[in-house]
Structure formats: structure tokens, C-alpha cells
Image (cartoon, rainbow, N blue to C red; front, top):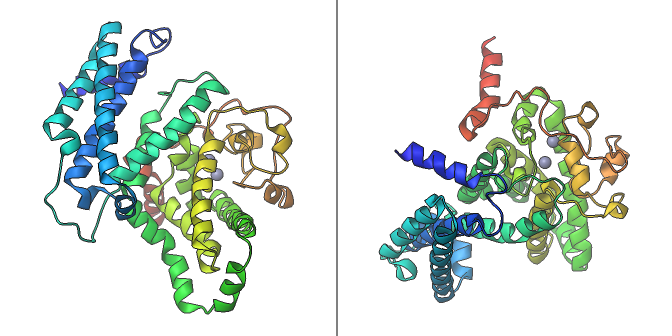
Amino acid sequence: MFSTLRKSLLQELEASQPSTHFGTGWISGVLSFFLAIAGLSAVVCLYYPQLLTVPEIRSAIDVDLFRIALHVFLVAGFLLACISLILRQNKLLGFTALTLILVAVSLGGANADTSHELTSGIYFGLDWFMLNLTLTGLIFLPLERLFRRNNQSVFRFEWREDLFYFLISSLMVQSLTYLSLAPSNFILDNIQLASVQSAIASQPVWLQFLEIMFLTDFVQYWVHRLFHRVPFLWKFHAIHHSARTLDWLAGSRMHFIEIICLRGLTVIPMYALGFEESVIYAYLVVVYLYSTYIHSNIKFDIEFLKPIIVTPRFHHWHHGIEKEAIDVNFSIHFPVFDKLFGTYYMPKGKWPSGYGVAGHPVPSGYLRQFAYPLKFSAAKANS
Ligand SMILES: [Zn+2]
Ligand SMILES: [Zn+2]
């Protein structure tokens, strides 16, 4: 029964036009479904803050304001579910949203509370996932509607895989942060860099910001190129390239081991050289939004910027299915590195005809993709 319900829900979410047009109850149904899931997740976070919330977010958020926002989410979800039930022939989205909202309310809704004592320990970033998904979605979903490059739906091919990658990397924020900072901490513990660090921190913040962008992109360029050139590493990076459609969620598709290696190495110049903390935080926000943007299904007319900064068309060519798109455009911020090292490719005004790895050898699904490079290594070791 659960699998039939899941199938029918997916069919409704992935419904094609014209049954998703404004006035069909689809938009209100999808929104109410999202608000219901977000509301229920927030209630669960209020019950288990120790296990499901990030301490830094907990300390930054005013709990009273959070409860008001949660109340608004649940009421808005309820109203939108009612609108969808009135307008739409298929009542599944509306009823599912109503049920989830009822569960959230019966668990206490915005008044849900915990008696658990908060101590430091292992946690999963469910609050980080919902916050990240809501804010990034609020920025990119309207942009992808207004300036879309192609007419793909929000619930396009393999959207669930990419959302699951987004969920896992948000939930595992504690271990990912710890492992990504491990190489930098090792350097800081063993190498004396005090004079370099004080010289760097004394510079104006805008200059520090630009330096971080150049240094991290330089390291990222070579690590990325290595992941393409070394067959063992390529098996991990092929997961990122297996996406056959690109949008704001597609960049999340990355093997856990690759995330640790890539971040662990690229953050070394940023953390070890003593840049100011506020500049590092600003950079982290910018790089997150920027890498989402270059994967997105957005076509702005910013061709005049293409010699200076990476544009979506530049990175889409990195994902292109064409032969010419193999091993090109490794930079994430500045195409100058590709120009310098001979890997720049930007055919005038053209976009790739498709995305993915030739022959599509990577299996679908998170677990199969997680095992894909490891299986390959085990098979090689046994042969
Ligand atoms: Zn790549
Ligand atoms: Zn990419």
C-alpha cells in the first residue's frame, strides 16, 4: 500500500503540462506538500534538537520567532492544501499535505517542546537541510522559471536522486565539516605560519576575499583535473557527471569521498593562511550560491562576463555529453585557469546537446552510486 501511495504521489508531482498549469490546483498542492514536510520536520527538530539540529544554527535562531514562522508554515500549508483539494481532480497531494499537517499539529505544532538536556555530541543537520533547501529554492526556483534555458519541469529526470544527495550532505554536516577541516588543522598544528597569517589578516577585506577566490580556485582546478585524469579518482567524480539534466539541485550530486577530498584540499589555503573569519564566512556563502548558479537551468545574457568569471554555459560545457566537452572547463570561479592550462572550451553561443557520461555507465540511485567506485576498486584488486 505504501509503495502504491508513493508511486501515485510521484506521478502527481511529476505530472506534465497542461495538468500543472496555474488554476489546476497542482502548484497549491505541491506548495502545501512542501510546507507540510517542512513543518513536520521543524516539529521533530523541536522534539530532538540535540540529535537533529546544528548547534551554531540553534544559537543563531530566536526560538520564539522560529515558532511563529512554524505556525505560519502550518497554517499556509493547510490553506493551500484546501485550495488544491477544491481545484484539483486528483486529491492526493492535498490530502497527503493535510494528513502531514495534522500529524505535526497533533505532535504539538509550533508549541512542541523538548525535555532533553542539550549537550555537545553527535548531531544531524535536519534544520540545516530544511533551511538550505527553502532559501536556495526561494532564490533559484523563480529564476529558473523566469530565465529558463530549457523547458524542463522542477521535478525533472532523477530529481529525487539529487534531492537525496542534498539531504545526505546536509544531514552529515558535522562529519563533513570535521573531515574537510582535518588537513588544514594538521597543517596548522605542525607548520609555523604566524608571520604569513598576520600579513594576510592585515590586508583589506575585499582583497582577502579576492585572494581566497583565486587561491581556492587554483587548488580546485588541479584537484578537479586530477579527478578527471586518474582512472581510480574518475570513478568517484563520474557520479557528479552522471546527471543527465542540470538545474539548481544537480550540483549536489557528488560522492561522499569526493566531497571530503575536494573540500579538504581546497580549503587549505583559506584556513591555513590566516584569512579573517568574516571573510571566510562571506566566501562560503558566495561559493555555495555560485556553484548552485553555474549548474542551474538559467540563461542570462551575460556573455560579456565570460572571459572574467565562470557562467552557467561554461560549466554546462564541463558536463556536456559531446566529445569536445571531455576534460574541459575545470575552473569554478575564473576561466583564466582553463585558458592558462589549455582546457578552455566555449563554442560561440552554443550549449551542449545533452549531459552525462558517454554510454551512461553509472547506475542510478544513491546507494548503487555510492558503491560504484568502490566496487570497481575491489574488482581491480582481485584481478
Ligand atoms: Zn568534472
Ligand atoms: Zn558540476
